[in-house]
Length: 347
Image (tube, rainbow, N blue to C red):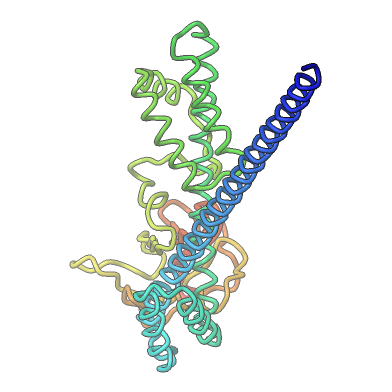
């Protein structure tokens, strides 16, 4: 009887051990499967993130190509209108190939077509200089826009800081601080599109939190000094300060000393068809820029245009002896052109 009990106990113990082993194996299997599931999920998340980054990179590359194409086409169109004799006929098929590949949304073909067209146009020295000047204008405009957006974002951040300090117990303080964090993040590496978005969201949030009026009041009381130090815009100087950066302005000395008058229709009439010009600084402009200046004056009625090698002297800049100018670089530097009296008039 005792042997039977002992045998049963041993058998029960063995069964219990076997059950324990099975449970342990099942637990290890579950743990392994869970780990594998986690690894698979991590790999899928990684693949998804990598795919998102690739899509973002491809979208940005396509956007840059489109922008560069738009700029090249605009420059080519404007240059061709003024200097059609300098445009090689083989440029036509290259333009068509670029437009076709863009329409088909074939990025690789579009990139190659753009590079081919640009390389051919680079072989035209006059166009190369023209495009360089246009790029300078665009770069300055882009920098001015980025500066303005950055200043606006900083003003938003400073307003939030000022408001929260004065209203530290307000129910909206935490919402505003969270918003300030987003603005600060956008200011770490300022990009135009990111700044535009955060500024839009900030002003919308200000409206939701009923502090938009206070924000506008803060901006009015804390104006940002212009980075360009341009003169204040008035009704009298507005045509000089405002307008397209690449626009040419012709301001004429109508004092009677510059050999130019207006007829009854308001057209300019140059003495002997000759216009004499000077620049109020040392002339470092290239030949293409000077040809553009002369072209603008000839379009106003002059048959010949003489440009002085010496800068305008003080006598040439008396009241109403105003210069004409390009607006490309800034209001204070460059592009000034002045009509001056010829030597036969006693200068």
